[in-house]
Amino acid sequence: MSLPHFFIFFFCVSLCVSSSFSALLAPITKDHTTRQYTLSVYLKTPLQPTKLVLDLGASFSWVDCTQNYTSTTYHSIPCSSSLCNAIASLACSNCFNPPGPGCANDSCAMFSENSVTRKAIIAEALVDSLALPTTDGRNPGRLGLIPEFVFSCSKTSLLKGLAKGVTGLAVSKAFSSPYLFALCLSGSPSAPGVAFFNSDGPYYFLPEIDLSKSLVYTPLLLNPVGITIITYYLHPSDEYFIGVTSIKVNGNNVPINQTIMTIDQNGFGGTKISTVVPYTVLQTPIYKAFTEAFVNESAALNLTVTKPVIGVCYNADDVSSTLVGPAVPTVDLVMQSDDVFWRIFGSNSMVRIVRKGVDLWCLGFVDGGANPRTAIVIGGHQMEDNLLQFDLGLKRLGFSSSVLLHRTTCSNFNFTTNNNLK
Ligand SMILES: *[C@@H]1O[C@H](CO)[C@@H](O)[C@H](O)[C@H]1NC(C)=O
Ligand SMILES: *[C@@H]1O[C@H](CO)[C@@H](O)[C@H](O)[C@H]1NC(C)=O
Ligand SMILES: *[C@@H]1O[C@H](CO)[C@@H](O)[C@H](O)[C@H]1NC(C)=O
Ligand SMILES: *[C@@H]1O[C@H](CO)[C@@H](O)[C@H](O)[C@H]1NC(C)=O
Ligand SMILES: *[C@@H]1O[C@H](CO)[C@@H](O)[C@H](O)[C@H]1NC(C)=O
Ligand SMILES: *[C@@H]1O[C@H](CO)[C@@H](O)[C@H](O)[C@H]1NC(C)=O
Image (tube, rainbow, N blue to C red):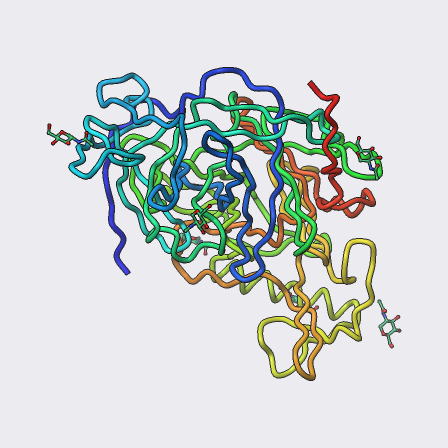
C-alpha cells in the first residue's frame, strides 16, 4: 500500500486557541465494535452533543460538515490571517457552491486525516464554538466555552472506519492551552472513562482517590520526523513518544536489540502511545523475545500454553484472579532508569476470549512485523484503567500504572453535575 505524502511548510505548531482555560473534562466511551475511544463534546450554537474519535497522534481535529451543519457562530479563516499561518495552512480555497460551512472564498484549508484507514483530505478550516464541562477534579460543573475552536471541515466519506455515531476526530491537545491533559480510559462498555484538560490535578475517582498523587514521570520525546499519513516538511511528529529502554517479565530482562528502542534520524524506532491501536504492537524480534520470556515465566507459575496455539493463551480455569486481573507474570516497560517503569498486570496484558467451548486468557500484544516505523506502539488495552498525564509544556508523561491497585477504576469518576462549581 502506498501512502500519499504531502509536504507542508510549518510556521507554528500551536492551534492558537488563545485564552487560558479553566479545567475542563470530557467523558470517553469505548466503542466495542471498532475498539476506538470516543470523546463527548458540545459543538456549534446552539450547542449540539457531538462524538469524536480520540486520536492522540493526529495533527488536527476534524468534523464532517456536510451533514446537518447548522450553527449561528461558525466562520471560515481568511487566507491572509495570522490564524491561517498559525495552523500551517497549505492551501487557499474558493467555493462556487452556495456559501455554507466548508464553502467560502479566500478560505484557509487544512488536512483532515483518518489514522484508522490512513486516508487524508484537504478541507476548509472552520472556527466554531465548542464547550466542555468545567471541573474541580471531582465532578463536572457548568459548561466552559471555547469560542474559537479550530478544526477542519471534512466530509462524510472520511468517517469510514470510525465508530458509529461519531462525526469526526479529535486531537486531545486541541482542548487545552497550555497543552496539558490527562486520560483515564475505561474498558467497560457501559461506564465511560474521562479526559481532563488544563489541569494537573487533582483527579478524583470514587471512593475519593486522587490519582494525580500516584503519577510517575518520564520525558515525552519528539520524533523529529512526522510520518503519520502526511509528511510535514521541517515539522516534528505530533505523536507522543516515550523512552522505553527495556522490558522486564516478572522482573527479568527480555533480551532486545537496543538500536530499535531509540528513534533514529529518519524517525524510525522508539516507543509511542496510540489510542487508535487496540493492542500494543511489537516489532517482530521484540515480540518473539517477549512472548518467549512470558511463556517461560508463566511456566514457573505452573501455567501451560493451550494447544492449538492462537497466540499465547491459557485456559481461564487454570488462572487464578487478583485485584489487578488474572495472575500472570508482570510486564514492566522500563524508562530512563531502572526505578521508573510502567508495570502492566494481567488486567492489561491479557484478553479474555470466551467462545463456544473455550474460555481463555490470551496475551494482548501483537506482532508488528519486521520493519515497522515504530518498534513499540502502546495501544488502548494496555492504557485502560491507567491514568496518563500528557504535559507538553514540561515535555513529560505522568503514568500511574494500574489504578486497580488503588482500588478504583477509570470508570469511577463521579459524572453527577455539581452546579455550585464556578
Ligand atoms: C439531521 O438532523 C435531523 C433533525 O435533527 C435528524 O433527524 C437527522 O437524523 C440528522 N441527520 C444526520 C445524518 O445526522
Ligand atoms: C466566490 O467568488 C466567486 C467569484 O467571485 C463567486 O461566483 C462565488 O459565488 C463566491 N462563492 C462564495 C461561497 O461566496
Ligand atoms: C541491532 O539492530 C541493528 C539495526 O537493525 C543492526 O544493525 C545490529 O546489527 C543489531 N545488533 C545486534 C547485536 O543484533
Ligand atoms: C526460558 O527458560 C529457559 C530454561 O529456564 C532458559 O534457558 C531460556 O533462556 C529462557 N528464555 C527466555 C527468553 O527467558
Ligand atoms: C507448581 O506445581 C508444583 C507441582 O505440582 C508445585 O510443587 C509448585 O508449588 C507449584 N508452583 C506454583 C507457583 O504454584
Ligand atoms: C457524586 O457527586 C455528587 C455531587 O457532588 C454527590 O452528591 C454524590 O454524593 C457523589 N456520589 C458519590 C457516590 O460519592
